Image (cartoon, rainbow, N blue to C red):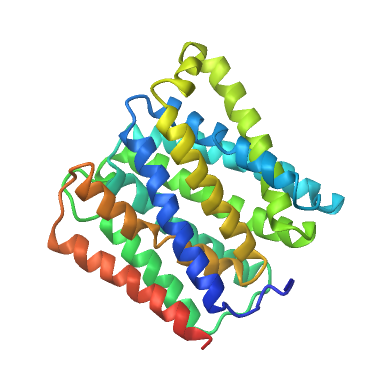
Length: 290
């Protein structure tokens, strides 16, 4: 398993991250489309547990040196999920998602270069910038977008900071752990426990809905979310964290299509241009190390 923060991104890693992006958009759409978004998020998070338990019966335990990263990741994921739900209560999927996801690659890229000492080629930096620009520009193409809704914009930006933070912590932690799936499976269990405790405190009356109105989010969303991020954490151990984070955010393309086709959110030319910019950035990342 590569341990260098500057290992190239192989075709296998590239396709795994793209698949994770699609799964990520699916579970986000389930949360946004749910009547009780907080309950839907809880269903997705708790839905990680069955797959995490199965994985822990197969994969090795993470190195104890990774435990601080594990604890930090658990807290950061819970913060991300809480703020994402609040953001979705303020704006549409195609409003909130771009701001939250678009800001993360820029933050991760900046920290990777300035703090972690990662060297990125000019084409890689351009690819990351193009993806972030394409994603963020989607939020500018509607009259009722997140940037013109100050509350939604603030919540989405805070969510983006959580995404960047847990991406860096999880990526470094998985490398130290020596087992990406073992690391993430324990993180998933801890995250589920924290979020379930949060729900028991703020909305205990909704918990029975995990096996009722939110069962689709529990089964489909939970499985999609676990599989998506398990692949991403594995990719963190195979390629630069900044590149993986940026490529994963191409999920906005899938989220946009889901929002338009299934959630009946409007499409226009500017959204198409923004989407093409995002895809162009993904292409640059793929070409950068061929």
